Amino acid sequence: MSLLSNILIDGVVYGMVLFIISVGLSVTMGLMRFINLSHGAFAMAGGYVAALLIREQGFGFGAGVALALMFTMALAVVLETFVFRHLYKKSELQQVLFTIGFTFACIATANLFAGAYIQTLPLPEWMQGSVALGARTLPKQRVVVVATGGFVVLLLWLLVARTRFGIWLRASVDNAGMSSSLGINIRLVQCATFATGAGLAALGGVLGAELMPLEPFYPLKYLVLMLVVVAVGGLGSISGTLCAALLLGIIDTASRYVASGFGNLFFYAAMVLLLSVRPHGILRR
Amino acid sequence: MQAISVLPRMTSAPERFPWHVYVIGLGLIFGLYWLFPGNMLIMTRIAIMAILVMSLDLLTGYAGLATLGHAALYGVGAYAAALCAKFLTGDPLVGLVVAAGVGALLALISGAFLVRYQGLTFLMLTIAVVEIMHNLANKMQHITGGDDGLSGFTIDPLFGTFEFDIFGVTAYWYSAIALFLCYMVLRRIMNSPFGLCCEGIRENRDRMNANGTRIYPQLLKLYVLSGAFAGIAGGLSAQITQVVGLDSMGFTLSAEALVMLVLGGTGNLIGAILGTALFTGIHHFAATTNPFHWLFVIGGLLMLVVFLPQGFVQKAVNRLGRRVVTSTAGVAA
Image (cartoon, rainbow over all chains, first blue to last red; front, side, top):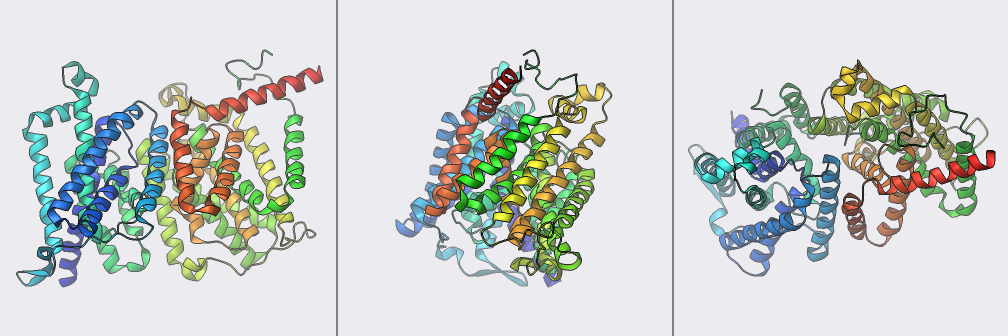
């Protein structure tokens, strides 16, 4: 029983981090048909900037993270406007190559500025220690991760389902050409979506720093993980990404607890199974 | 000059014996041997990787199936050759046949499932295959040696006479001639109607289907062929380095092979070889100074390739090739 609850709790925490990092990638892939393999670089950028601000510049945790998110989003806007926009019309292979090349350059840059070691992110006092929840105690940091994850899900749902921007976004995902001719400013939708996705990735990078250590090879190391979540969830589907992230997070955690010798074999086996049954996404027929 | 038109491969008459390719290829092997006597190891490495990249080119270049799991086929070939040398026979040629067979077998098993899918789904499934094989190899330590790698096997002299020496001279000749033979075989196959059919599938699946081509068996055949050659590359690497590490079945190797292929140009076997030589050469010189500088170089190159006019290297090669063909045709006439 305790094993099961351990698996569930750790799995949900891991799944939430996976969701926050991957959802932006899923939406950009669905909206712009743009395979952005450098998405992890934004997560790394967020984590690095937050770590530098909090550790070296003495910012508070909240302020440091907020500044890091804003920095990452601004970076994403600039890059989208001047570089990535020109890739939307290129072939898939070309997008893959450019963004992989960009990722390599980011790895080298991170190493150049911050060195090849792991960046630690000091936790504030209110996130240290543990909290009692019924019969169990949980590290506060995990509670924060799950709460933030739930909050992000709620916010995204409100944004997509209840706002004018959400309508534009859904219309553009379904048919970009038609929405554009109906007067939706598609460039604005694309740019804002890209920036939001990058900001969420940065948030995931900060929140997941304990599970996925921040180091120069971060964007390459966790790239496959993000791609798996996006592919299983279905391109452009936020709820699908959430389901896929939670499911895969729990499966991976369970396999680590029960059959640790096999590495992430079961994670990939689960992905093969899910993809072969639902090649267009877990929630789509 | 009618033959070199906008449709270069549509030769209705059977191709004449390609003697000029033999002359150029063997000449290059001799020439490189005399020019760079101190660089046997890196040239051997290039030859082995070039076979792998050519086999990847069959899928990605000819049939348009971008895969990031090709190292699974290379890796099982390597393990098969090593295990064959350890338990059966040390004869290198038998080892290569076993490696090719095992590579083809894994390609048949995984391909029967994989080639039903396309695009991103196919790409992700190939990653899953390589990761699953990697984890299995790690888990089955009693057979594969796990993290420590598989070693402790010896390879008999080639043809019973040529010992594998410490300077890598035999290894160079062995791998270079293997590369040449693989190139000739693949060139012949991909110029056949089967090769044209694969290109047709890349260009327009629906249309090929409407033409009466059964796409699934054709792609599976191509996948098995590609697996056999990837297995040969793996086998060569195992026999020459006499150790098989877990990284020979890794995602990184697959990605590197794809990068090499793209640098040289897809859908073109010569491009695959040139791309490998370019990548390995740059890697050799850039990585010796600082591994992170190497990432700047390769990242910049990749971004550049996308914004260069399409098939930049390929066009240059074609132009050069055309000039050679014209001049040799002129001499023959």
